[in-house]
Image (cartoon, rainbow, N blue to C red):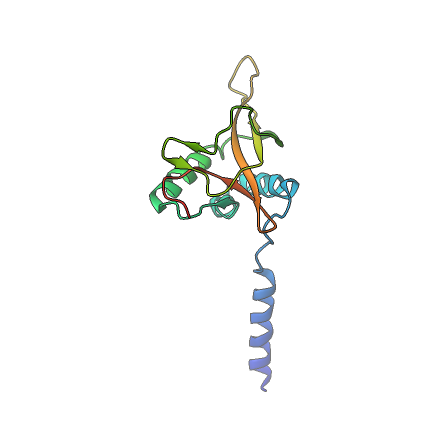
Length: 143
């Protein structure tokens, strides 16, 4: 092996070592941490990998991700896992989750433009499947 090919091979290994994807969150605490990191980095790809899409149509995925990206200009104040609401239902009309959610990820954003200092936020249903924690959305077309 020539010196030039050895340097090229080492370069490829170095690139691959730096590009290894992060493991998918296996706990709700890891999911919260990954969500915070992706939001702070304004990474739509980082958020996308946290959502269990099932067989949701791409147009619906795109709409959801655009909505999430709209919050990237806000600073997260709190992000925590809580219980599902007492009136939670697996299905709403023709929309159903791909698998049973267990908890809720509640995210509050700082709202400096609000003179009352109120927080704005959002909630995501979350669940565990195959040893991984996921954000879930209802869809008409699920697996």
